[in-house]
Amino acid sequence: MSRSEQKRRGSAAELTDVTDTGQIPSGGDLKGPSMPSVTDDLELQKVTFILIDFEGTTPKNHPAEPIEVGAVMLRPAGAVLAEVGRFTALMRPPAHAPVTARQVGITAAMVADRPPAGVVLAELDSGLREPPYVAVAHHASTEANILARYAAACPVLAAAPMLCTRRLAQHTYPGLTSYNLDALLAHTRIPVPADRHRALPDALVTAALLQRLLTDGAARHGWSRLSQLTQLAGRPASGGADTTQDALF
Image 1 (cartoon, rainbow, N blue to C red):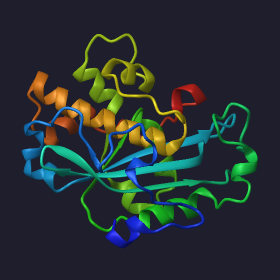
Image 2: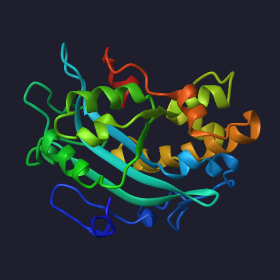
Image 3: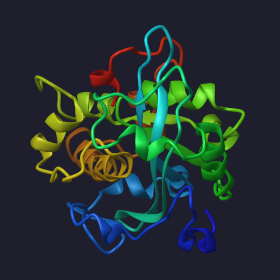
């Protein structure tokens, strides 16, 4: 994403400062404990991580439809991952997938005049001009399924390999009773944002979790290369979309 686009604001989406949330470490770098030698991997140094989260509806007998996207772009910078851009936007779902009372913090009125998912994802994709990219999500099959269905609108993002922080956490912290995002935030003592279950806050907190997983994985298990992360937590198969709102979002 170009530097000018990092500053841009638009009607459908906005790119904002990392300090806006107050819950993620400020100053542009996701610090916490210093990341060890994994950042010395030459392949990883070339990568921009795209932490992506969708909020969505799960209509009966249809795949999930996104109603909000949040994305945070991170690049290795010394011993930390530094934020280099972010994107967030609401989307109008198709008629067969209306917003219901199950959504957290998003109402039908909020998305009624928003552009559809294809338009929003094309806008996000148009800013991805500095490959290579690696997408990252929690329960990544959800995001992978959505991106696969909208690949024509976001070909760069859809083609990026994806890491799943849930799967990475299972290898980093074996034996936990749950690996959902809230359980992992509690385990790692990462603050839960006040607007949890909105797309950008969830993407930001997943970014903080990724930093912690890379730090702890290197310290406990000796991970030092991007290829190891891919073996451990590469994207699940994009077919077979899940059907429950709680599992997905």
